[in-house]
Length: 293
Image (tube, rainbow, N blue to C red; front, side, top):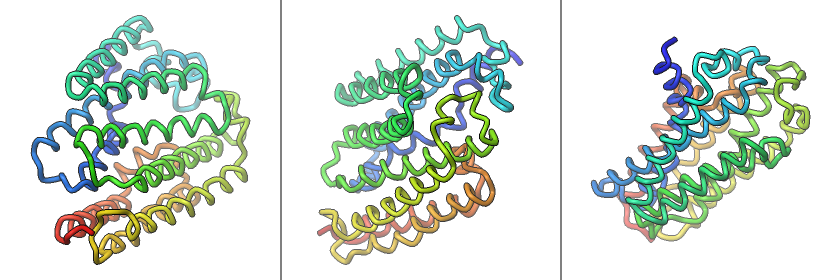
């Protein structure tokens, strides 16, 4: 493997779709067809892709000794020794510097959000990922920061606080689902990841059940109670697609054992992709074809 390919792989571009949360405000603030806001949201997406890739590199450097003991993570380029640690650190610093410079140049407040995200995830890498429950909460807050960053970029005035709640809960669902699958894959042997020893499958199943119910209720409340939505409550038509997507994810976690990589599920599971597309199309019609209340 060449160093260039190793660096690209360590940047984990397959996980960049997670940064799509930044487009939430663009859609729900009814600015999807305003080119200036689309372009600046794309810039924000690129910023978070670079920041997250910088963090992945740092994480792989820190975790390299443990990753070498993991059945799959041992194949990561840094763990295999394909990339010198010094080069990886320098590349991570460059990515973060370019991303933050672009963020502050675009909108200073967005730059602060990007910096907060970067510092919090770096702190997660060194400290917070070793604290049970907090580890998943920090990851979930990263998604909320993405949503908040998108709202700042599009100068959102109609973006409901309900959506922050929904995004937080959805991120928690994905995070705890990932923890569950990691624990199952290791067969209860958490020696390659100490924090997993603090969890158990029954505990994670209970947490996932609570978060699932809260996610669906919060989204349902959003569709008919958030301000400035269509007066005919047409956003409620999107509820079945959200329910199916959540239940499909749980099916993949509990039956197919595919919850260890939510990003890969999104890229490979066709029924889930279809439900997301149908949800998006229904939301666009509801938000843009009917007058807001």
